[in-house]
Image (cartoon, rainbow, N blue to C red; front, top):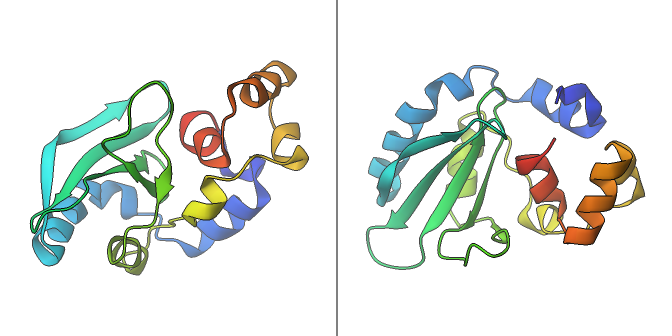
Length: 149
C-alpha cells in the first residue's frame, strides 16, 4: 500500500524521519541498552505484510512486548508478546517505549485507536471482499494497518 491511501498516514509520515526504517536494527539495540529491555530472538521480516517483528522483554521483569515495524515507512506499534496465536494481539503503548521511538522519528499510533473497530471510511479504502472479511474476522484498525494496508 502506498501511504497516500490513508490521508492521515500520508500527512503524519511527512513529519516522521524517512530514514528511520534503515536504522531499525541499530535503534533496537540502542533502545534495549538505554531503557533496559532485552531483545528476544532476532528481528524477523514478514514478506506478506512488509512488517518486521522483534520481541522485547524488560530486564527487570514484567510483560514482554512485540514491536512491529513497517519495512518501508517509519511506522511501528507494540503488541502483547504473550497473546495466544488464535487472534491478533492487542496493541499497547508501553510507558517509555512509545516516547523513545517517537523521539527518534518513528510514528507510533495510539493503542486505543489501533485497537478500535474500523469505521466506514477505513473499510471503504479496502477492496469489497477484504472489507467484508475484515468485518467478519473482527479486525481492528491496527490489524488492517500492520497486516493488510
